[in-house]
Length: 175
Image 1 (spheres, rainbow, N blue to C red):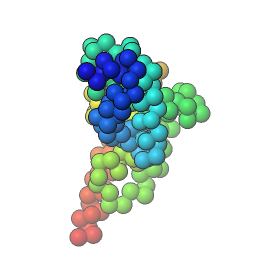
Image 2: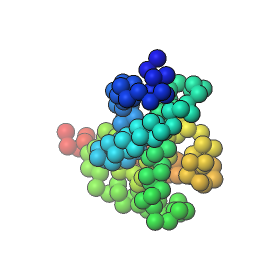
Image 3: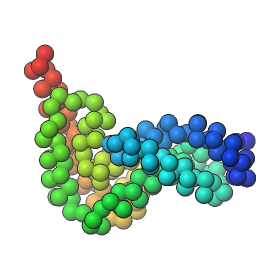
Image 4: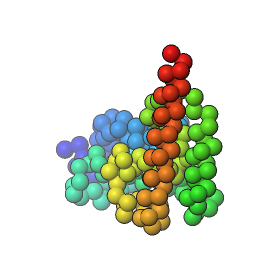
């Protein structure tokens, strides 16, 4: 019933929705952005978008999944605003991943490892591996081909495995 009240524009219903779904959306946003403040901004943006578009929600998917998709889309939109080039080269992204990983001593936390990836690669990993997006959906979100997201995913996962192995061996040496 909260959903129907929100669709009628009742602010109390929006407050209930926020309390119920903001934590899950924040976790997704944090994984996408790697930064607490950016994640908070992203949840705020997604919530405002939800308020504007809740009338178009038809119940074809669970509301929580729909709201998380709004959050993911807001994250992709935010990354697009930050990109200086629309078509970033996958090799450049790999170089950035290597450079970002160079100062990773002893971290084995998955979120910390994800934070070491550049935004593009982190978004592909989070959306595909954790949120279940298909490569076709990622291609549409990023305005790229399916092979682009497959390439970014494969390289990012390879980098994450290497980072995790290095962090594990570094922590074992410290013991």
